[in-house]
Amino acid sequence: MLLGITGGIAAYKAAFLARLLTGEGADVTAVMTDAATRFVGADTLAALTGRRVHRSLWERPGAVIHVALAHDADVAVVAPATANAIARFALGIADDLLSSTILEYDGPLVLAPAMHTGMWTAEATRRNVAVLGERGARFVGPVEGALAHGDEGPGRMAEPDAILDAVVAALAMTSTAGMSTAGTSTARRSTTGTSLAGRRLLVTAGPTHEPIDPVRFVGNRSSGRMGVAVAEAALARGAAVTLILGPGTVGPPRGAEVVRIETADELRDAVLSRFNEADAVVMAAAVADFRPKASADAKLKKDAGVPDLVLEPTPDILRELAERRTRQVLVGFAAETGDVVAEGRRKLASKGVDLVVANAVGRPDTGFGSERNEAAILAADGDDEPLRSTTKAELAAAICERLARALDARA
Ligand code: C5P
Image (cartoon, rainbow, N blue to C red; front, side, top):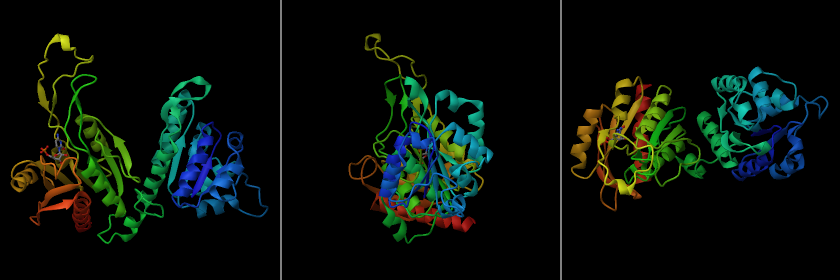
């Protein structure tokens, strides 16, 4: 892979990134601009990557070095990417080794912007970012935090591990895999099921929290484990996965694009804004069915007495997706404490989805928070899989297999 480093203070963090990338087994070739070398030494990058660091178009007479670098790379990441670098990439200016290489290169590109807040929010930068986004570049960050000149705000470069995740996600998207996903490189290679390569999946996971006031919420016991297991299984089959993750206890797998949400409304926005590009949606999130009708702006005081909590229904996202769908395969979950299969079948019909995973909850050995699940996969075409106890990983694999076959059948 190609690691472009441009001239910002965050360039020192590119050294950490290089170490993370080589630790994942990547062959990293660093290309530094002149300004970058003011912030971090080329020798540092050479030592960390074990490779020569390139800095100039003219370093070997007769060699067309930018073309060789561009053609050798499976993925390119520029971290930090300054406002100037972003502008030059957007315009196609090729006046140094890095900009010439990026112009020649046509693989997955990840950019980690780092600049002052005013530069990031400037109309010129907004437009350049939009242009590059339309061409398929992935942006990771910037995040809010301390900036040069003692200021704070958006503009700080994303942390190296977040950039690594974006690189892995970019690779998964193009299925030029060679790096591990979720530390499961062997799972990726040993997968025998139907492939999901080239498919875009939206997976939701975890609970939603519906605010009562700034510190209290209505929530549920979902950990997010089931949805994360589905995301992992889909990544292992080569899918590009966007994981929309509520505030549970389980972290996301490496390789997924991760969107964090708190409330049902945020989850709805996150899913709907990505729905058109998706081939399938797996709604494993335990979306709250009810939320407080009004949430207080200030913390409710105990002295003011017990509040009357009036609840209202949240939007039924899955039903809305079923109404809007064009080609997407939809998978819902039915978390039940009673007759799991009968309730699941009812939900399959009422929600208008292709598959419902009906699972037992409310017991310590299955469902929320547990490693195992007692579940049946119920299908609109009647080809059900009966209720059985499995690990969440096994169930996730079974869901992905059904999903992959449904997508192939539609193609
Ligand atoms: O209606 P119920 O909550 O039992 O249905 C569960 C399924 O519907 C899950 O797949 C869940 O993610 C989804 N759901 C939803 N919007 C809600 C509630 C649940 O999409 N407001």
